[in-house]
Length: 126
Image 1 (cartoon, rainbow, N blue to C red):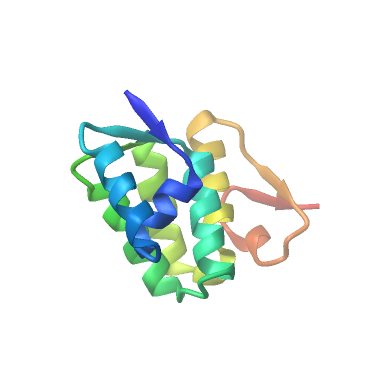
Image 2: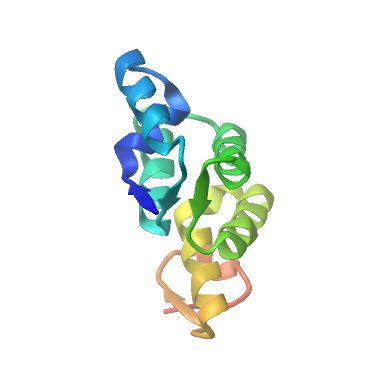
């Protein structure tokens, strides 16, 4: 299966460049894999460069999880991260994903200096 990078995901979600969006759609038509790294980078770009709200970011993640042509790496962890992000959007999706991946791998607690993240179950404030 093919894989996509951050820029392809951004074109699929934002359609801010018509030509590139069409090329991205054509590329994924037969299926494509999305790494958790590409997903995290995409959400960061949508948050910082496109200034999407937490609700819009959550909707974008949900769209990717449900997309007919995309297969997300570790969809269970992504879904759990989405649930945590919806409950506590101030954490940021990347931190929610990092915590859920660590949880799934059995590597808790997740050490952090982030005071907000340290309040989430499974973390340890350093």
